[in-house]
Image (cartoon, rainbow, N blue to C red):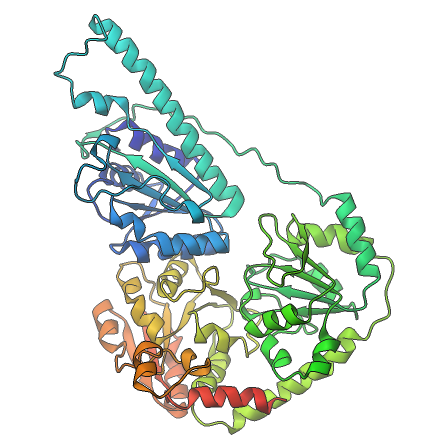
Length: 587
């Protein structure tokens, strides 16, 4: 097996292997050659070559999101590194373990006007768990001036002793920094940046490694149990409250034990609100939050106002529930998360530093007092009524975005993975109850459209189940480079809802149907995905009405020799009116 001759490169690769970081996404470059050599010559690693660093970052996010283990990205020096920033911010706010490896020039070559050189130290400071800035091997620095006299040393023996001592210190420092960064990514869940300086020559090889870095384990300071005082305070408030609301954001499938979900569903004083990406299902829960909230009058809002609000999971999609809870605030808001707690509704009282499983396993068995409440009983028939009105409206409306999502939701294969694009796509899906066997994901850390395709592809690469990606036209075109790789599985499916622009802006307040609005907000266009499909080797089909859509979907998910794109064209100027009328109708 071949190794880079540079000890620092060997150190990085060996520690990644020892830490079991298997998936390495490499963008081509010269300065990162020592790392590329090390990773690609070791069969332990699964290496991917993706040219566009922005897409590479989100591709790795998709892998880490599914495996719940770190994936790494490797790039050359300069602006290449900055293209990772959108993926890093998504990983930061979604608690995804992403390890960023950037090659850099030595200190003496930074700030002198060399190409592909920027100030890379701590460049992601506000959106990173840890920045490790490694030191150049001393040997490389000495090679630059090996013919020069070093007057501070009287003889060669003194020079050698001085060199070996400094190099040992550098090696020890680098090992410590790499271990720390990886440990934090794994155990805290989030992105870390390891900046690695290399001097030329970059391509020299050796048959045997020259260093044996030390592996350091993570010393966890996580609490094994919820603090007794916190539990006691929670129990007191719980036993005195007749209206408890649990609101679940983005949540990985099967992260909560069924017995705790069942216990919560059987409590008449509890309403559990979930979203598509909560991946929680129970007949007594309240999915499709906006269907409940949107039609309520002030009197009904006050009846829904909770005494206690418990939140867990990632960020909430529904703007309506956020607006409701900010106006009709609970007396108590507890957020359950081992890492952070956002004061989303401006009344956060407790950050319970635990997993939901840990908290519920310690809390629910201690509840002995069952308070009389008709909270769940009151809202259960309203949920049922809304669902009937939902079905009735969908029968009446013409072909549109809303109609398309109804058809798509019914067509999705069981036991598949659904990746959703941001903006309109994820919000439309919130109105529908997805099949419980389907795992649903979306980049809701920063809610951007910039890497949704790339994330979906990364997910598909490591997932045995079929991945279906539903996206809007702007999102798809924006991240079309996400299809520029050789790893997309044949069963990957992309569904583009093409309403010729940013349809969500037609729903938001604004002066639509003006040249200014069409150009700068909705960004009206006549582009399609057909030529992109051909360029990237996808089978392509399109539909412009309900009949064509159902015909296309009949075969769309079946086995094929290539991944597929289905582009669905909807009427640009009708979608917003049909959606807004939906909320009026279900009242």
